[in-house]
Length: 457
Image (tube, rainbow, N blue to C red; front, side, top):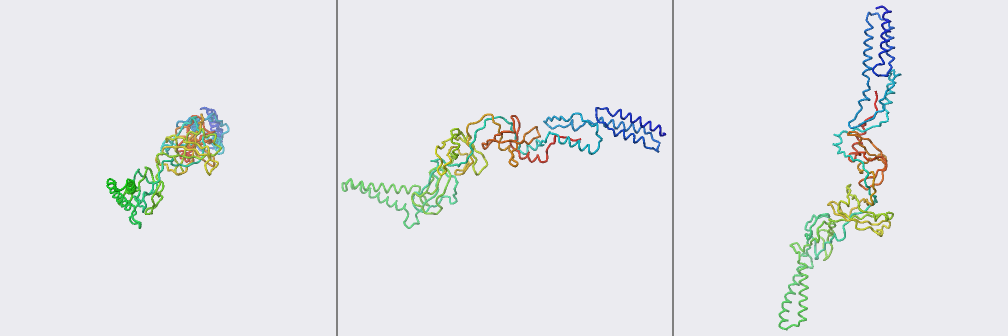
């Protein structure tokens, strides 16, 4: 083929290619194909090839590429359960697109910075492994709260002091007895023996005195009958006998081989041991304190500034110093016993508020507690459990579930707390679903599994 014919063939192929380039609905104007065609036509080919067929093949390939160009990244963007409205899927004007590296980089950056933000991918399997729980936000009643401190104590009459009934050396029945150990009513706590004392065993002396008084009394009965002694003398003898008998029986009561038994007057636990094993005790000396733990009291100390609100206090939540568990008097048969009209002695700026409640079995009397006194409830308050919050540099966040496997981080403004829930002033709305258990795991997942809602070609 000679040069004029080849030139005409190239011009025809280029015209045909330009006419076909606008088909398929693609608005791209690829002017670089025309340049390639002209460059090919201007080249001086020394080989005898049919370039018209080669140009037609290039035209077919170009037409195929444009027909397949349907922006898959726009049409297939979908997450389970989520409906993202991609407003940017409108017609793109690439009239000046020269497919250069700089143009592609600028195009990618424009779509990558789209205003959709980022979601956090957290699959159902991950949620199940983390024990994830969510709660739908509702506007519910929220109790006013007075936060203060207090301590747990045993009510008056629920404690008893164990005392020695005789003098001697005390030996505990259980040598390894410790404070906090449970005891039953009339249980033998210790024995007091005076056998090795220099003054002798008081019980032996009491028995001898009793037996002597008994013999004199029986003799006096015969003598008075025979009118040998007067009635007055007989009454004096009878009185000495009654006294000796009472003393002996009192000391003999509960006597064991180890000595006089000391028993607990009530059931409960050993609150305090006052005498060491093997110590000498006098008659009536305190040995131990036994406390019942069926009913306990919570004594809160409230600042005077809350005095006007004390009449509205209806319940209390408290967290003892030795645990993170929050206890509620409403769940422990609790009741408000009294609120003080006089300041606590030695703390003139505080007023006592006392609740009584059933001990659930693991509350220790004498310990201090963080206390939340609940007052009149306020209706229509948005709140979340304390466990839903995460904190970063003094700011608080929650994680909102936007679909089955996607979550969003949300900043919130906090209000009042009652120990269990926190009032949300801004950041959440009715009907939204918030993570209440497992928020920390979602936070960790956000570091590496963010779902970008923008896209790039």
